[in-house]
Amino acid sequence: MRALEGEGVLALSEAQRAAVSAHHSSLLARYARDFDIDRDMEAKQMSLGMRIASLLGALALAASAFFLFYQFWGRFSTASQVSILLCAAAGSFVATWWIQTRDASGYFAKLAAMVAFACFVLNIVMLGSIFNITPSDKAFIAWAAYGFLLAYACDLRLLLGAAILCLTAFIAARTGTISGMYWLHFGERPENFFPAAVLLFAFPSLVRHARYPDFPAVYRILALLALFLPMIVLANWGEASYLPFDDWAIEAIYQILGFAGTAAAICLGVRRQWPHVVNTAVTLFIALLYTKFFDWWWEAMPKYLFFLVLGLTAVLFLLVLRRLRTALQQGTPG
Amino acid sequence: MIARWSRWRHTLVGGLALIAATNVVALFGIMYNRSGPPTALLQVSDRELQVPGSWGFESENSGLALGLAWRMASGAEDDYGIAGYGSRAAWLDRRRLEELGFDVSVPADHPRANRHYERQLPREVLIVMELDGPAYQAALRRAVERAARPGATGYDAKSLAFERERSSRLFLVDAGLDYDSLRARYPDRSRYAIVRGKVRVDRWLVKNKGSLNGSVSGLSVSALNVPVELRGVLGRDMSGYTATVAFGQRLEPWFAAARKSGSDPDSKGR
Image (tube, rainbow over all chains, first blue to last red; front, side, top):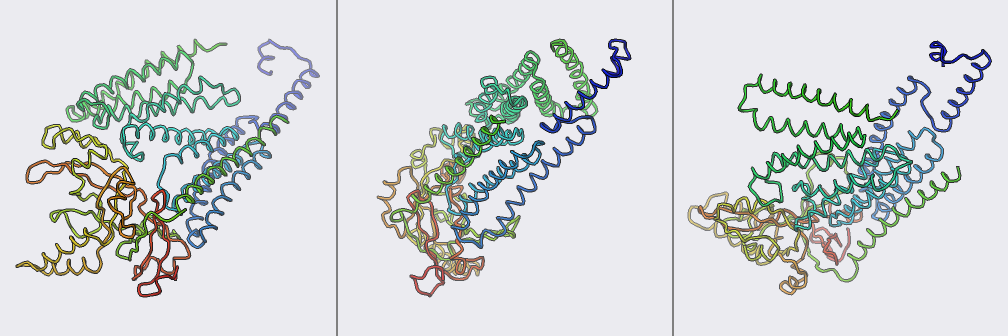
């Protein structure tokens, strides 16, 4: 307002200025009370610190819950062990719910949600240990469902990421078992991750996330990682593939698919104005390119030349990305 | 505000229902496994059980899970007299591997054989475990012959003593996909247990000639939790005891009873 007055756009009397200022202050106070918004830069920086503290606290509390049980569980009867595990899972969930209804900032609710998720994982893992249950990929489904529930209830991206990873593991394990392999080896065939990647990428386009504007980015970033990290592995290690070709041919196929796919993702990100997709795809493109540079030239080139090529490639990328940024800015409305 | 409260209430109900349902499903499976007469009851001793190492966080673990010390029933050239993983199983030959679902169409001496067989990942199948049966007797006989041959060393004598007194008598002797046909072949439930395990196909070079044999890379349930009521007998101290391991409807094992060697066989956890 001061800037507008300084440039002669706005001319307010003293009383009007005081009224507008009071209105703004009252609005900010209400938003801060109801939604715990940051009112200035200092508050924003403090919020970032609180988010980091909340994350570290949650990880530490989850580890503490695990080791507490680990330290004493052998002294309890089987019935007590099962009761403790069930009560810990249910109790931590109720505590999360209770905190969620009272914590406008959400930091404590998020912290409690992560501990609740850890307790539920511990619940299932320890039931398996206590009763010598054959390991099953179905556990990933229960963890994913619980993770999604907590993530959407507490608006928590970290738990959404954990839930997506569990779901990805389940789909990849099921894909792997089609070929007859034991499910725990699903990670040894990177192509097992492709169906999950496609589903994850499509999901936020099929289901609107009006109340969770940050969630589609998490889906798409993890989908891109699930699609292109296996491609980077296969572009360098063809023997891990299902394809019935020679290793060099498989590596060539995945190099082409990797470069073309990440380039296509960058274009899609620019067109749809998804900066998270652009950034992730650029990072993966560079990762694939650098691993191949290492593969092709590390032995053949003098080291100064190798690093010069890397440096020049980075400069070339900067130029391309600058053009992309310009394109993005021109595409942004307003 | 009302809408938000309603959403939270739904979250509470949904979350608790999910926790309850998951636990009910798991516990129902456990009850089913332990219902009815066990599919096998093996009387094992401390020879057949392994205490976990104390590395990592194990020193802070108040619980205890004992591993089953299984050995592979194999020919003389592959018998090292120790519980082990990955040993070549003569009985897991080409025909048996094909029955288990492996693609054994490429001859073992073919130039592409190595790649073809390396690419095949382990499969979960049913495995027959034999306690103190013909496989152990064959291993013992081999140890006796080695100790009795001309030029036998002190090591051979020690190996024989170890085989007689300390080595595990639990051998993996067969594998298949169908429980009933395996049980029909091994009907003695006090000597043979059928469990799930992971089999992989390996190409071996014997006298410069390629051959195909499978190996067992592990059992699906590799260690048995010791409940607190049996900890007085089954502890980290590997002193003489006998434990009854039961195998349930889902072929998952558990300690049904344990006693110090020489005590009342009906006692439970004393």
